[in-house]
Length: 509
Length: 76
Image (cartoon, rainbow over all chains, first blue to last red; front, side, top):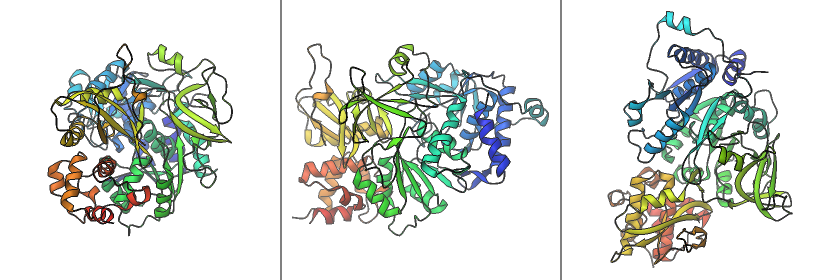
């Protein structure tokens, strides 16, 4: 049966509790009824703009009501929203790294419209623009135009029609489009919701949900719309830079009951929070992106009294497909498959590894993307014909407990985001005192960060150069891409053909 | 032997924090409220280990919020 995900999410919530706050943002709010009206108006606006169903529309908005309105409005109309990644809190016109990447995404997706709060950005000169503020479109419509456009007939998708498309970084640095269908947006509420919040018709009824991960990322979108709005929660939107101080102020003022974040942010929140801050509102914290070190897990539970649940997912799966149970799963393990999902660990011979063996983690289940956008090569490698998705993660299974053991490609997961080392290396080689470099993962207090091995140009003072290189990185790269350590070396390990062998660099744990 | 706030400031600069930020740090205000972010913290811990040979444990690190906290810990 054809189901439009936006119509489903809004319709059931408006029917049950139209006046409940759906969104809280700064000093304002939108009830579910108000949100539904604004979403229908946005769909009507797209129709008046002659955006045909299945056209790609790029979303360049922070975590704000306008993103939710535009995203769900596009789904209602049958257009395909494509969120553009950007550093949180930084307008695209000031962003240091994503310019070429954003242009690539706009071209690769074939976007016909850019929905943005920053019409001054360079990309905006090359595409039709729909300017917004943080609450919605700036373009107003006459009542007659709204009546013509708002026939309240939601797009009815066929099984192959797309709903939304997210981009994920590839091992070569070129982002890949990951298209998802309407049913994929409804999967988290049907599967992960009961696993985390218990079996009840509205898992998140009465909850106030805060995510420090943006709507433009798979995890943030899953948390705030796939679970939050779909589950009937009040979603507290946080658009300011994910600086720990501002998040703590939000928690103190708005008393969320559920917090979605990543280990590095949980760590930063702990050291920022005043010891007297009342956190009793928090009853559940969900962590993703990397394993939470046992010390941090314990410290957070002691400080907040809230259960900490760890999940594992990806842009390709959208729904987190592994979930831990407090008290049952040891910190540092991945827990069990989310109901509806199955996992395997396979070796190079594609057979399941024996207990204790290390292999690649495969997953199968609802809501998983079936192809990359215009990348049949990568699709064939990752989205297998037998229905299993190769996550690229290396895992070890022992006595029913799975542990993450690294990646099968060179990508590094840090701060909840992927980093391609070659992109960081390319940047650092721009420093006048860096002759060559290699970037690898290192662990500090159990959390993954980046370390740069640098061959300095001659006659450089290594003592002060390390700090200079770290500052240079901060000025040129997104925060999560910045190394925390510089090691100076005389040479870097390379093959006879000159290929860099990062795995031969010392691991710094 | 203890570590002075001046020595700590040098270490913070080696950790990649701007000198202008370090020069303006108030000793008893949480560093995260003074421009030191979640990626600066691990860099500071690494720089402390490199400069002083001191490895700060996991649980201890969670409690080090101000310059004074670091000074006290490193003076133990």
